[in-house]
Image 1 (cartoon, rainbow, N blue to C red):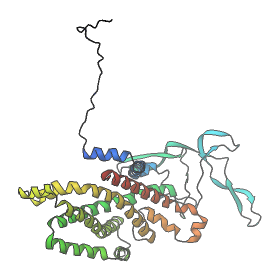
Image 2: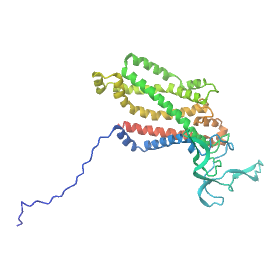
Image 3: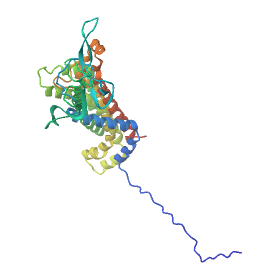
Image 4: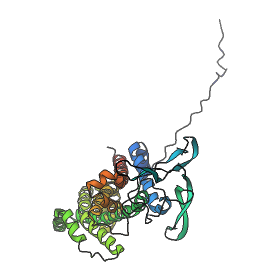
Amino acid sequence: MLAFDSSATPPTTELAVKKPSHGSESYLALVWRRLRRSWTGMAGLVLVGLLIFMAIFADFFAPMDPKATDVGFAPPQVMSFHDKDGNFVFQPRVYALSDSEELDPVTFQPIVGMDYDNPRLLGFFVKGAEYQLLGLIPVNRHFFGSTDGQPVHFLGTDKFGRDVLSRAIIGSRISLTIALTVVFIVTIIGTTVGMVSGYFGGTFDVWLQRFVELVLAFPQLPLYLALASLIPVTAPTNVFLAFVIAVMSALGWAQMSREVRGKTLALARIDYVRAAMAVGATDTRIIMQHIFPNVMSHVIVAVTLAIPSVVLLESFLGFLGFAVKPPLISWGLMLQDTATYSVIGSYPWILSPVGFVLVTVFAFNALGDGLRDAVDPY
């Protein structure tokens, strides 16, 4: 029979248990964590960042001077990695179109073909047209283009022989500036009017909302055209641009104010707001400290969804000639060249600015959808 020694201490195994550290996360951290789980929201965030970065350094990313002229309605030049004998080469190149010595048997015009004897080599950070970086520093380096400074048209040229890609990149600066400025003004006015109207209520709210409904009742498109036509053609471009921004902002704040007012009406009845009133807090403090932070989540999402609408509106008005005047460049102004069906059928690359508009609208809509799910997941 085995004897058990009670004095002996049984061997113990020490388990190293690591206690998880539960740190308190801020509201922004929670929103960012939810946003990272949405691939559409992250894709929209990346595209929005790239679009803004491209607009800021548009002159650097544009391969050519947007005002330089060449052959009108020249087709896009395709980048190639083969020489004239069909051998693979590492340095990309394009081949310009040139007239050959052969004649068309029907029209007796010279047959246009690729000039394989004079390739235009491509590279990064090449020298080109001089410009002012950020309006201050004179430089002549471009992100991508021909190494010898010869013209390259990746998206073809317009009727005046101007490079479509360069004009579209430069035009992003004006189009996004209009959209961001209009949405910024609309957000400031709409948020302020909505919070004040919803918080004070009563007769003040009733009369203010009647004015908001009057603004919303205006037929916007005819009013845009009527107001834009008041500016004389000889007015400076900056004045015309400021007037267009003012008109868009004056007609766009009402919808934002209605949405913020609805959120404010619900927040004004919450216990902590009533408690602040009971202890004698001023109306300004209650609005700024208790109501404003709680409506910001809705405002941020509304902003990201409003920017595509302004971009589309600017493109439409620019197509009609009521948004931007030359020498400024915008996507809507570039689309004026597509006014006739014959031009679209013969030179379809003129529709290239539509691609920039579609990418911009998709980017901001995807970011807005991702933010909406991250801000209010339930």
